[in-house]
Structures are given as structure tokens and as C-alpha cells.
Length: 112
Image 1 (cartoon, rainbow, N blue to C red):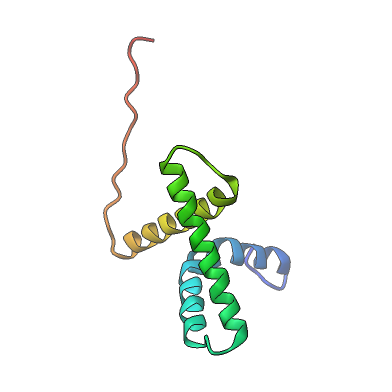
Image 2: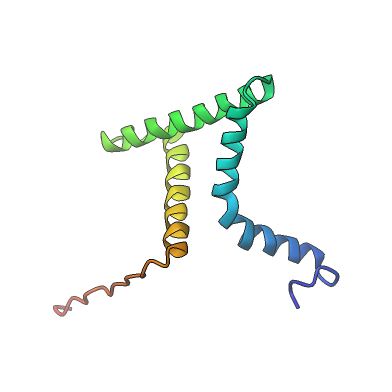
């Protein structure tokens, strides 16, 4: 009933964007990047490639800064954005490959 676009159009769109499109986001970003490279003769797509370069460069600096033991918010935000999306992409790929999910249980400390 919640996905009935005629009864609850706003809720249907919210569910669609939140639950469905977030799984496709990585694929859409990859398609966008490849398209920008293919169309890089046009100024708009050159600008998009510059923005992609800035995003990945600041993420790389965030990674390096974390490994060196200090955090710069300007670099750590793009780094964690890329990291979270890479992990989610790996999870989707594992799911599609039907990789077995291994779960673990924490060991309770018996001294308490």
C-alpha cells in the first residue's frame, strides 16, 4: 500500500529514492564519469571532470592525512564519502556474486 503512487505520491518517491536509487548510485556515478570523459571536448564536461578530479584528489589527501595521524576536515569528508561508497559497492558486488556472508559474535568478558 505504501508504494501506491496514487495514494501516497510523496512517500512513494521518497521510498524509491532512498531504498532503490541508493543501490544504483555507484553505477550512475561510473556512467557519468565515463560520459564526461567521452564528451570532454565540451566545456561543461571538462568542468565536471575537474570537479571529479578535485573530489578524488581531496579524498586521496584525506586518506594520506589519516595514515599520517592527523585529520583535516576539508580532506576527511571527501575521503569518507568515497570510502563509504566503495564499501557499499563492494557489498553490492559480493551480493551479486552470491558471496557467503560470514557473521561473528562478540566474546563476552566473563570477568564482569
